[in-house]
Image (cartoon, rainbow over all chains, first blue to last red; front, side, top):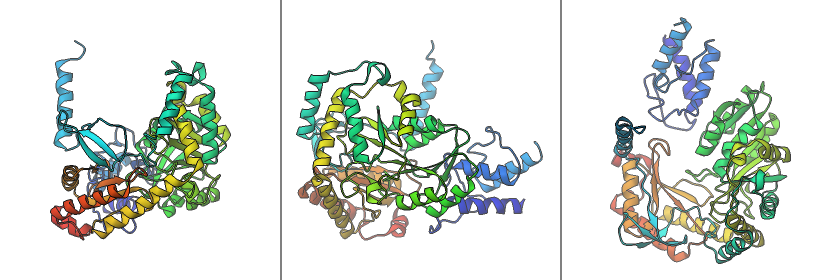
Length: 84
Length: 415
């Protein structure tokens, strides 16, 4: 789980934070409700997860709530990997 | 009853939630034509009050220019009030085509198609030319109407960090398997007032075989040496595949927009773009006024030169009195306050000083990025600008923010 979270966190930092910004985030930082990721740019995160972990995330699971922190995203990935 | 008590109560709760979040929008009634000074009734029912307008998109001061008004009036007499039709049934007059040709020449493109608004142009263009084999790669700060247009299109969507050529290049590499790649950006970004790095974008587009789309709504008429837009400013005239822009800002400020660009793309919009096909034609009176606007902006650069001088004076003045502004070249000058309540309080106090400017905060801008967006106009005279600066100095002093940077303002007011 920790490795999974780290990979997702690394992607989020690279994909969404400014290179020269002073912002730091953790696995529990609120991404959507915190205004770091919006629904418009969330699509690249979904595509990254689907490709890297060979899963398909149904629209009903790709909710702002499920994507609101790295911890929640990791839980979603794990659940889908287990075929639940 | 179809509109049930439950529905009414539910909508009421939604409105209350908007109010509680401090996001409730109220209109202010203006009792005069647009100019540097406007008469405003605010709050509703209050006596009218003359204030200096620093929040209009009236960049060239043409919204109430006597020659534009006279041309519109003459157009009303010659071509009537309404067309009662969409363009392709019986809604196209000779002057519609004439305006399209004038815009094509001005923007340096191959062809142009008028839309009821630029929002409609952005809503219609993507689905007219792209499908699921393609990808749209947009700057993350593009206008909401572009986001909506992208959502209506079946092509894959992606975004890149605002203004980042390095991130855009990564995305272009990632999507080399697609049939067409379309890079999408604003020319001038409406909230930050900064310009897209169009020269770099066009170079990347050529390197990675992509097309380029630019929304020039906050640029057409005044950005670039002769006001043709961001592509002129960046030295890439003729290298942009699709431009959308509006007649509702610098170019007369009434309404109407267009898609301008490669001939086949424009023609496909004429055949397929739903806001063009299913919405009424731009009224003859607007087209007539816009033709005069094109005469004025092409006859002289005097108005855009004055706007540029006003912008320089305003940016230097705000910096001199110690306010934190977003750097840039455009007449959109955000005064950064970071805290949403502070932005609202400063805007209210500015109004008390006779200055009309509006605070913007999340979700319109990112959290912790609240600001007062000021916009300059060629209609502003030096006296307006000096009074505006004096008001900002008075209000800035009241809140203790003069000479303070982001961290210091954050320490005083929080984010």
